[in-house]
Image (cartoon, rainbow, N blue to C red; front, side):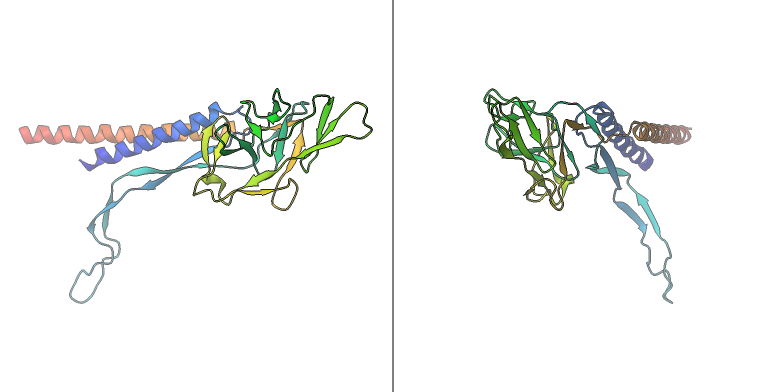
Length: 263
């Protein structure tokens, strides 16, 4: 019976939906995490009677036809890149992006990765690095004698050095944008990498046209709304239950057919 396989595809789709929601909820407190959403598509149809087929010699047409669907499949899991809430931390090495863009990170193998998680610190060499020790491009080093740093909205990094009347400029942070942010490949550790779908990275100065600004002493929170996720979870649970009831109903119908056939 076709209903069994159709309902099974529905249960698998809702299982994926619940897994996506679970990951969103698990990352509610992850710095700069971006919410994901599962999208679905209907499967191929069996055309028992093709819509628009000719029904008589006089040229009359079938107005709707008979098309029997084969179920549903997961088409994509989108990443929603809306702005997360900025929270003050008072840590001078915490940097939040207010607006569009990503920090570029230099990986140990020489490749580039990108992140919006600005919970940075200093390496033993005085370079600004991520919490995993990866250098934040373009590789800004803070002098060992510095008693503090200041990062303005345009990404200019200045260090306060004893004996100098004015802060010393030690570097300029850049931000990177992509034509299709949803096409970035999430690799874990709050990092993303470029893919053919994301398009080529485009670097710019914070605060310039199309790029966000830097907020020192702040971190961007996850853009997950707990109420929305719980509502989606309930909806997914009910859809899963209804598909399981279809399987039960189809099984009972097959049992009845088998009983009648055996009598």
